[in-house]
Length: 406
Image 1 (cartoon, rainbow, N blue to C red):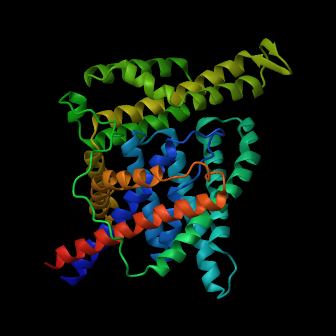
Image 2 (image 1 turned 180 degrees about the vertical axis):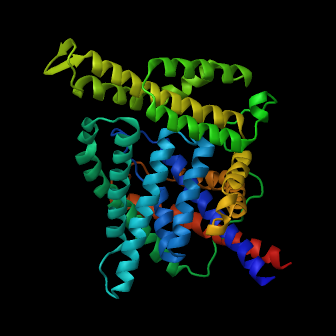
């Protein structure tokens, strides 16, 4: 009985932290980023704090599930961005976990939280760039971003590490305390969900079948380079959109949000791909028919992946996606991966997102724009907000424990 109670409370605590990390990731997605692939990595702060306070296993679980849940909320599940973020997040957490373990095993201060954060940010950006080369833009010209991503990772890793370090110190100072403000029982729903309720044939298809179809399609576009194949896919997407009563405007809108990435994936082969049939000259570049053809294929590949993930998110509720993942992962039970646990965490996290979103917005409104240029002020400001949110998860966790005992 006590074991089941401990497991339930553990799930509740992890779910709240996943929800908190998800809110930070969603908020970050609303901030423009001038260099493709370079983001602040605010959600990584929760991973670092969990690594220090809960251990590596929980930190990795939070990283994986917040990436999945964020993609459910933003309608990007199984999209190119999701694949890159998912893989890079895992590798980054593995790196930080190893360095943290190494620092403790050596029984001396080999790495600080800031140093571990910088290493994680570097690995995250390098993995994303490598995967983008392998599965999206198979052209070495993409590595022109490596110096910028590496330099950016150092500064971003330093910032998130400094915030995480301050949070860990403040949590130690306030250990056992709870924020005084009462938790509201009802919050307005988060308007970022892309799900459109309906009773079409596509809506009624089981979520695990739809997820499997998206995975198969994602693999297929990596191997087929025929324009006829992509023409057939466009007809297929049009048919699915028509059957599910989804407007074509929505599909074009979802692709337009990633227009910069699509444009870059088209330009790299056009300007850097060698070919025999020169079509035109631009500055020092020879534009060939082979480069144009490759650029078109790369752009079409991205559009198809974006449309597939958009249709999945539009016709499948986040709850159904969670249940579908639970059934897909059921065969992995002997390996210690519980589909029921994952579904429970995702479900609880989903219901907690609006609460943390409102709390985060209230904190952001208190930002002093005149002082925002000072990194020290930003570190203090961010750490205070996240500490309050983190302590709020503790308060909710204690309440759930009391309810379980009753």
